[in-house]
Image (cartoon, rainbow, N blue to C red):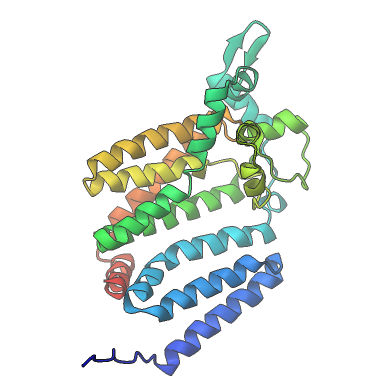
Length: 311
């Protein structure tokens, strides 16, 4: 005879808490950034995975760190950084040219301006491919780690979160325009400037689809070029790939990292200075997480407590 699986019951307190969090998230989102169907999708995914099985519940609990990051990123639309400090446009451009300027027959130009004048099809195609790896690679690697090594997964997820928080703080301390902004608007500050694909427009034209056009239309803030978090993410992935001793994957991560760094400059989305700042953010965030986890303070206790919830 077949035995039926035992029913799974959830404590009323658990149901109340998850429902309350979902409702508060939806109401707060509508108030700050307006209603979007993405919000309902996120609520459905979270609750669906949380109540489906023990494994999916642990999975979504672990990935809640990434969800919190995404929510904060989305809410930044309600608090544009240029409202708090002046945007650095000309000063950053001049610093880039002074440090990394390329001499040409018509004078010194920034690396972005050089590649704007000397782009080529292979570069346009590869830049788009590497830039598309920005978020999928960290999330896929995190998913792999969740099933392979939960402790390393949690270290990776916390480092990802901390690095982003450092980057967000710098966005508000030092609002900065990207290179494409100078190419489009010179040194004039225009608060309502929408997102722009920059040199990635050439990738969209090559593939015949508005891939990056649709992505950059949802950008939180144009004046958040410094630091380049595009450049931070692959550093985090490579570090934990090496820490987990995934040699072949780490070789691929290193190629993707170099590709994203080059693409950021080639497509005029970031200055070399932005890329270097992004690398510094990644190194700082990783160092803080590794240091705090091995300590005896609150962060170490939080890490161990959270780890128990997803093991």
